[in-house]
Image 1 (cartoon, rainbow, N blue to C red):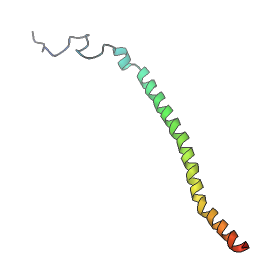
Image 2 (image 1 turned 60 degrees about the horizontal axis):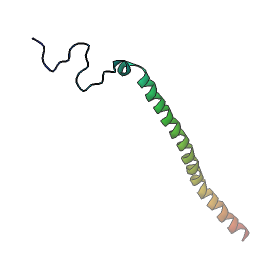
Image 3 (image 1 turned 180 degrees about the vertical axis):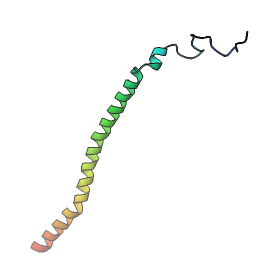
Image 4 (image 1 turned 120 degrees about the horizontal axis):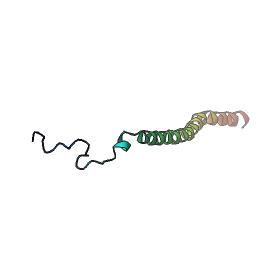
Length: 76
């Protein structure tokens, strides 16, 4: 008689909540999230290498232009 209507009985899941308590407190979900994180990190590393190579090529471009201009000035 003293229990409120909205409180679930002990040992029974509340209405609208899943009854899979072992999965909720298990480590499987943590392992799955770590696997997703590792996959995202690997993808980010591979993408970063490609953009870094392009950036290095752009930083060398002024030196190449200056060298070609010097060659033209010197030999023509």
